Image 1 (spheres, one colour):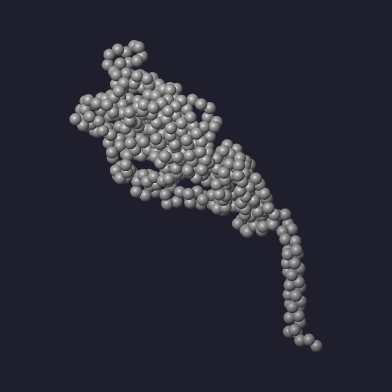
Image 2: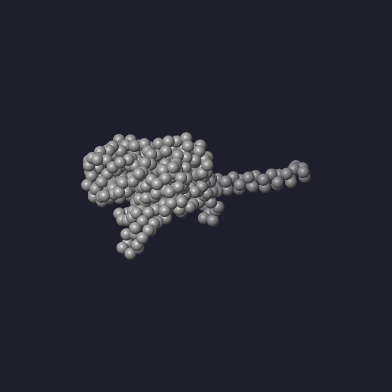
Length: 466
């Protein structure tokens, strides 16, 4: 006979056993049929994505300054394999947020990369200077992925990496101090050459320039200087330029002094290539030349510009001639990239002949009573120029092919007697010359009278002695 104490234990034990059986069955069902209820909670965001073992293969081509297709859809869990086939006219690369990147791909060439398993939306872009800002981006859409902040965090992290630990914009004092340690660009224009056939070799270089202590910017040049060589001639002269690309990316040259179809002589050439560019000077002026490879704003701002001076017939002699070319400078800073600032028309610094304040550190020279001609060109790529010399008046102004004042006489056929001008106003790519005749010794400030731009470096000194 069983004791009264054993009977309750036996009932409880039976209940426990029954409960264990029910739980075990339920667990088994869940293991076999996970999330059978459509109302079940989704996997928590950020859960690891299981690789599908399948690959999505896409060929990306180049059209102008964009990738085609610009959007790629990839099932979540698939590996993405991208072939970049460069159908453009200059080299490009393709980098993704996770760091996977192609090498620079030359026109006509291809390269395939494995981007990895796609678990969220991500982005790719061309890393060559300015190309991303021109629209060379590619969006990867992870079809079926859950929305998380991961991809945006990665994009932000990549953007921050580009700007991390970049010095700010140097001050005027810092720029002048560096200019004193650097030989100035030779601004004095030599005599008009007697020959009628001019031959030059322009070698493209890519280097760096220290604007101030610890502040370095890319410097792309023709023959190692920015501006490049100043060409000088007269109407009817022929210029033959051999362009050699010793850089690491595509470059070109566009001579405004030429009057020819641009297709061949102005085409972008790859590293190691060369071309011959021949033109005959048909009209007088101070003509800009520059790199025409996209994005032009970046190539010009990084130093690829210069001037061709074709003197008008019967140009009166002067005691001294100087050439001043204004240009914008954009810097990579913590806030934004140089290319972004160029696109926004927001220069960090300005310069005459490639370096801010260099003619404050090394003043241009003249003597009392001398007639001094200033050939002026605004190479931009963006900012305007209101050229002025403090303490003087221009008695001769010639702009874009015409005199408005000539030796104190108006050329409008109406104004009589002595007249003059205070500024020569030039938009990007415009040029001309002015003449002054200082009557007293002193230091005359040379400025862009858009004063905020003068204070960024479009400034110098004409030192007049007895």
